[in-house]
Amino acid sequence: MKMKNCLKIHLPFLLAMFMANFAFGQGEQAPIQIIHSADSFGQKPIPVSLDGFSGEVADVLKFDLYVQGFSFVASDAAQYQISGSAGASVTGSVTDKLARKVLLSNSYTGTSLRRQAHAFANDIVFAITGKKGIGLTKIAFKAQSPSGAGEIYVSDFDGHDAQPVTHDNAIVSRPSWMPGRLALYYNSYKLENPDIFFSDLSTGQRRVVASYGGSNFSPSASPDGSKLTMILSKDGRPDVYVCNADGSNVKRLTTGIEDSSPCWSPDGQWICFATKINGRRLLAKVPAAGGAVQVIHTAGAPNPTEPDWSPDGKWIAFTSQTSEFDICVVPADGSASPTLLVAGENPSWSSNSRTLVFNHSVGYRQTLSVLDVFTKQVKDVSRIAGSDSEPAWRKD
Amino acid sequence: MKTTLIYSCALALAVTLTATGCRHKPGHVTPLPAGMTPPPAESTLPTLPPGPTMGTTGETSTSTGIPMGGQGLYDNMIQDRAALAAYTIHFAFDSAVIRSSEQSSLQSVASALAADPNTKLLVEGNCDERGTEEYNRALGERRALAAREALVKLNVDPMRVFTRSYGKDKPADPGHDESAWQKNRRDDFVLLHPKP
Image (tube, rainbow over all chains, first blue to last red):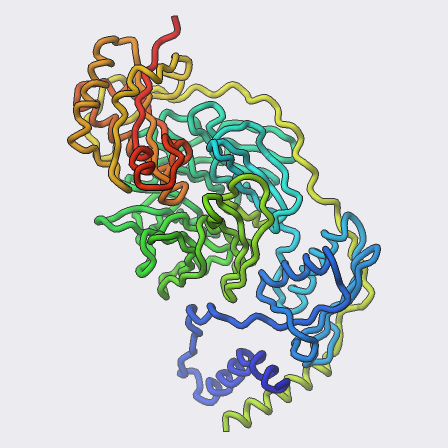
């Protein structure tokens, strides 16, 4: 059993070695086999055991690791053993049971046990996968009351420590983080008309960045923070526009008939949005500097909206609408069909390009959840107030 | 053959990892920075920059839309929600096409604007709760703009008509069935009077 487990775990590595051998044997002409992207889904989680922790620290570790592709098993079935304790502070270690090697041994001080546990979870993820953990990241979202009015909130990615950014009791929507700063764009009806606001959370300053005649909504900041894309109707159609971060130099990018929900490619070269072409609702992309619109392959996932491009550039997550809403992911290069993951709306990638935050309905309310797309493991985020939706994951 | 190779690879891997040993120095302590402090209370909003003003001639080509005047042209006017409440128009599911049955309502709105040249009009587009949030915000705007274009065809100056979408955030009926949805897929017309 143990041997079988080990072999399964290291199969990709062994496969790579085997193929390398094969390639060397065949000389330079041998084709290099590229693993098909669709194989990324349905992965088995990494089995770990967790010993010595209880209460909040255990809860945080389990939450963080579960939504980054780990599962919890008995010690004898675990590939990695995580153990430690949390008295006045968190102390823990990670042992690779196959290699009989201690990967990590660390203790944490300061702030709260909760943050120490998130920091330990980050170190575990890095020690085992080499990827940066998401335990200490933030999300922004809207919390709406039954009247339709609401506020923009920010919280830890698991919903803890939620704080309102606005105190307006106005309709709000679509928060978008300004990269490199603790600051947000969002849409608000505070001044009656739907306008786009910018709030700096570290100073409390805010200002209006788009308040043209008609509607101003769906803001999304470029990955380098220098530009903003949004939907404006000032020219008589709701189309995709781009402008500087301060709202200046507005330029219309599309003249489609049903354009909505623009987002950026991580290299800042493209803006992806939902549209309708020849009677079919599609995702498309347009160069951020202006140019021809190109369709993104989403066949099999009807009525795509709300795209979000992964930070590593490989994936576009979006909402597909049939009789319900579903979170789907498609390779950004169109190399495979979309994969339907779970019921929900408004997906937003974390910095690790594998975990999404999204909202889904519980009765007639919306609530937030996080999803590891490659294992389909989902955890509910603690509910803040009213109906919580349109989450945006801070990438830095 | 393959099995043998895999087993030998596994053995090689295990040996390599064991030989490499633990590079991480145990007992390291990571001090954590303080968490994010609560955002301070927001300062008062600065005065809005004036919206761009457009020319007064009504462009009739709808290939890319009829430009709209800035918010500054109407944001100090008095809203009369009752005057045109009887002429609210409704739409089919996921559609911004104005049905012929709504033409008489639009004609009534156009007549009210013709009767008092000092008035302007705000068209508020709304959706039922089906459809995603930002899609519905765009759909509501398309519904409002469709009424604006229809009014222009009835000789209303486009510079007197402004639009606003509420998406699915302002339902007329809070219900969750087709009867409520029908009422919610609508354009409300708000007559704007100049301040006395």
